[in-house]
Length: 325
Image (cartoon, rainbow, N blue to C red; front, side, top):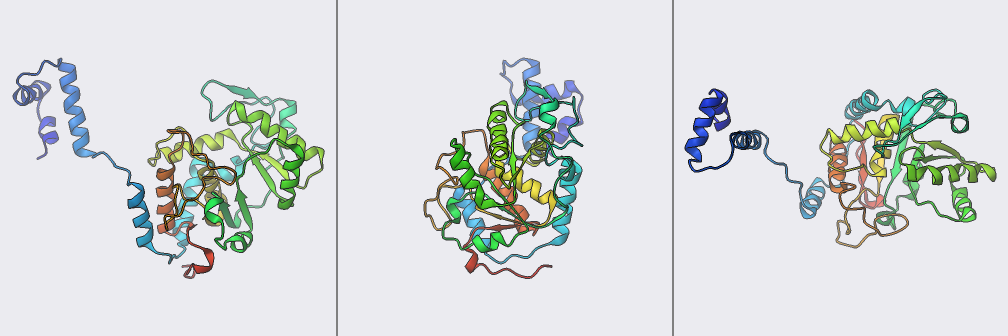
């Protein structure tokens, strides 16, 4: 029987007798001594998890190889989990249906600030989610640095719905010119996630509206983002906030029948030890303690291994994919 099991079979007085035998000269107060027993028992039953280091993760990826098979059952199960926890079909974006006039909401990235939907804010929302669900085949594009010379452009463009994330430039003209390439598409902005994101997000909306752009701006629903955060934290991601990439992958897993992700590699070198940048637009690492990129990668890599999504890490022209199961 484990020491924890023996401790549970005694009264509190008996438990203290065990402590006195183990630590005859201790000067700890009774409460502290009891706490030591609780901690030791906890560690005995639940050993501390150690996150694999970068080398171990890369070795695991290389051992897996490039062969992959889609598991439709695993994809459906995870999509059901997304539906149950976060309802992306109705809460992915703020709409007139889920965000009525006068409703008070909290920023999901702030602890102290809330806002009330007034007439000017309400007028920015579509009536309901503006695309037909479920989406068939979706691609989520993350780090552009790892995608250079990957040959994945055509494969990404063949998806029915492509989610990309990129930096917002200050110049209105440059921003509008850069957005033209996306033709009729949706721009997903975190206007009500943190107070610092409200003004830039509204600036995007009004800039594109002023020039009659083809893009439609959607605002992320803070209730949806908050639910996604709780979902992943319950599965072991220890970070102040999820990355934009994991938010979008989560949305895709809840909205799409098939999901492929590109450029999701959180390290400074690729699998061939060649340096890569961290964003489309700069090479700045995330703030320490703000994101938990290796933990996120391991969660996504697990979903890849069970066939719920496909993570593209190798050049697309060299990838050998097996048929759908």
